[in-house]
Length: 311
Image (cartoon, rainbow, N blue to C red; front, side, top):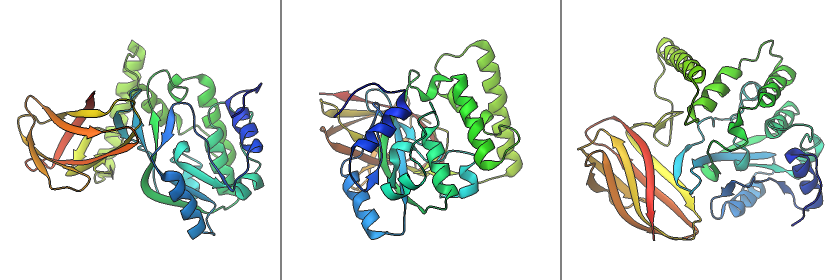
């Protein structure tokens, strides 16, 4: 471990990577952490795929206490031109061969918010090989005080820079989507923010209606929403000092039966009394919480909150 003067986060990441050995490059921010044993798996995957330069996978958003919020919704299969328009890779769940990292010059230490996206774009521009793994690899704590959700003007300027330099865009087409997500994650909105959010939300719904697209799901959840189609899978690592003794689910519709299965076990029936299910469990530090939920009486339902009791 080392500490010292740096010019910001990107500069610290750049210097940190320069100081260590190893053939695979990755970094974690203070609020993020890996699923257990994922580093061993990444090492094995790189060995099995010598032609691959970047491996990336799914990530989960968690609350400050470590409880599941959602999956990172932007993830998709690698598409070079799409990457120049939208960052669909979640940085903590990305791993790069050092050789490829060094060939494109590493992290740009002048950037404040988009140093990861900029790196992916330079790797893609040099036609490095990306491999997506359909498995959660990292957890990202999400709350209003995080740097990503700060809404700083500089962040939007950097987003526009990436679209302009790598994608050749004439206007910042990514701004509305990023701003919608920032507002969606904000608990307390000003009046003007509420107006903008309503307009952006309406535009999103209209686009869906015009396109007539089928539900776009990730582990059963509609992307960017709490709605579930069929069954959903909940997965997150638990590193709390106290064990999880009870999981509390809040869902709609209430007063109906849900089937819940832990780690592929036989499903158990629970009734959501007043829209809530409380399940006695035991997950200690270092465990992966893994269970599926379905509602036989409703093909589409909503899981809008998950919490727990510790002991």
